[in-house]
Image 1 (cartoon, one colour):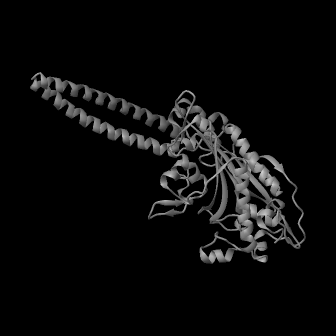
Image 2 (image 1 turned 180 degrees about the horizontal axis):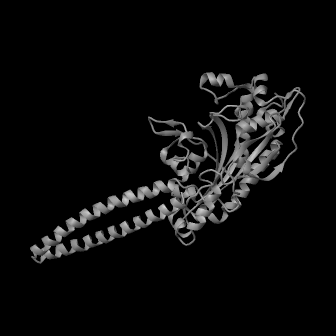
Image 3 (image 1 turned 90 degrees about the vertical axis):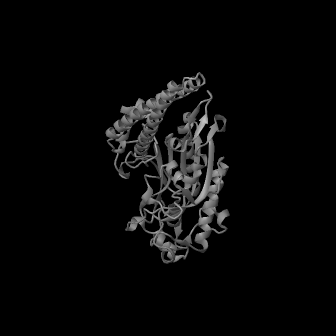
Length: 422
């Protein structure tokens, strides 16, 4: 959530940068400033009313002690009127503050100055690419056919048990899935991230804290009876560890990692682009999360990007990095880099990771602060990234490593799987 002082002091900048998202935010920003002016005016009236009431109350005691009962009763009647006024002002203040917060929740983060203007993923900017596209043997198959051929993933069984988008991993497919999770976690902890095992359901406050609510409410599975949400990513419970926390500057930076299943309702379209593992309702992901000093968060973002690079290079998968345009950047992010692996059998790029800096946007919602060198509380910066999301990584491995004799296992994973080929 954007801070009101920042909006007031940088009105033109905020409107200009939000236009990169293809949003004309002029009215929203004007309304924020108008509501804030109203809130300030009511607060000033309330403060004056309470101060006057307190002053008179002190006078009443003295008048009663002096025997000036009639004068005391006059002032007592006045305090009654002041209490009614303060009650009315408090109600107006709460209503105005609520309207202001509701409006702020609707305004996305201001994109970083490097974010290109654009509407769709076609406008994203490629900033890095590495790896040769492997030449497959004649008769090479897409991963959903390979999964059936080698009996390692059963999409039909998952559909029977739950529905489309909930695959069942079997045998060496399950072993490979587990190997990837362990490998990703080992890489992350080796880079200094502290491993956490996190809840798979969160409350509403947690969803609001990281920006999934109210923006992405329709994409989350909701347990209505308990008002809990199945997590769309470990970012939500992981970042909410720091909700309503005041850190010391010396505590920064903080880096954590965790594996969780993820649940998303948006997978509902049809066609080859969502077949097999390309898009799922339930999938596994290992996440990295950082809490940073504002002056160092973009250096940290570069470090996270380089960290994901090393993993993909060890897996020897051809990949590229995109800087997302304004129209494709998520609601809460200031700057996002997407990693895509090339799927040779499908002849397309598959997104496998997003690495983002949210600056103070999440921290303001979370009330995540640190005590700076001047002893004042300051909002921290939050970042996160997939390191990595498994479905499309697995699809890339199955398709790019297939041979006429079977699916070879990337060398870096063989100590985890215990086998070299499926």
